[in-house]
Image 1 (cartoon, each protein chain N blue to C red):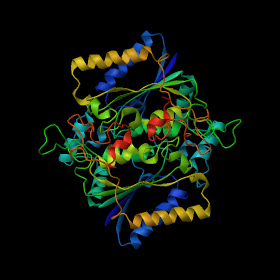
Image 2 (image 1 turned 30 degrees about the vertical axis):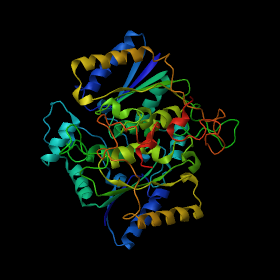
Image 3 (image 1 turned 180 degrees about the vertical axis):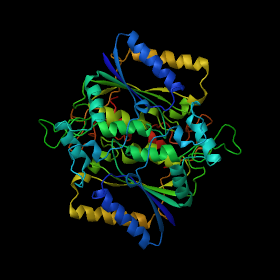
Image 4 (image 1 turned 90 degrees about the vertical axis):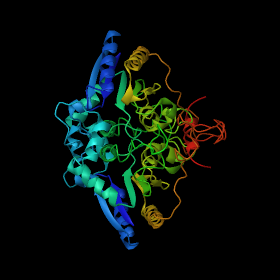
Length: 258
Length: 258
């Protein structure tokens, strides 16, 4: 497979830096092709503004979605965004590695999605048959690709369990796993977390490294999270889950098949 | 009250830009003092790196939490971060306004929290009495302040309902509302959303504007979200909700008192 490794950490001599090297070596040993976006090393600009859209007239009102769609379709996105789109088109799978900051991605990585996941590619694709619906949540231009999140967290793991105070991990990551990756049609593997990241012993590091190697061995074959597809019949025309699915339940968990 | 209006949108001639002006005028009419952080206008740098910590020796390994805590305690954070810390210290309430991008904040705003919510202020405060616990989730240095999120979303509102495909709004925003604002001890008001943001009619705009004015009138008095405090007895030593609270339930909803 072709694998894009998307990475955001400011210090190479870190737990994340060590796991990144292990991960990329492992993918090569497994026979995969790897390309990288090491966002700090690239000094990636995470801020969407009119400079992303080289065709945008100075002084013209900026409507981000419309400007992005026009620029994507006319190949007038800024060069750095086009470079990332090329990598994304090339990739069969994408690994997204970061330290969890305020229960989300570091800004430099959030801004990769803000800038690269443009309208016309990642959202706003009309459904060819269902009026008023778009291709998203299980369908879309990135369908067929796989995605896996690899993160570190300062907290212990129990706090990310089903009743842990930080929120169950896959639900705390819902905006990324479901709202971004699944939204664009990708198959999303369960996230891999290393907990207690500021105090990892050598033995714990070996465990984390072994788990990463194991998960990368399954990158092409492991079962993805069983999110429901938007247009497969489970949701009504208001995009609300029909009452016969997970009846009387609510919360983010209802969006997974059980 | 002293109110900090934290705002992230690249275009002043937008729905968000119009609501921002209404909001700031309303606060002034109500007799509040207002300061602003208009992040796009400020060309705010959202990327944490060693330049944030002016005392950091070149070539030294960067451990973000430790470096931030040292810099905060020795007043050696970069000038832009210190400027925001001054506004935050001054504020009794903070309004956080943004368009929802990929179910989260635009990167420029996420990076405000990444850079300004430093260790020693926003996290890593040892509990004075409970060994191994920190002051967070309802307690902390920012306790006593109020926070309200004001956002726009392209989608319709039903998709953000309890069984809507985007996830229930307060749960989709859990990393910000609970994991960031409540984490630091602030009282978090229910978020205010304007849906269908790309196709708001004049009448809908009037409704959104009226709702914003109403919510700002209650900024100091409306009931906050009833999140459970970490150290109030509801969570065990592993920070898991004790079985007598919301028994047999799981998911993000259990962290609210019912």
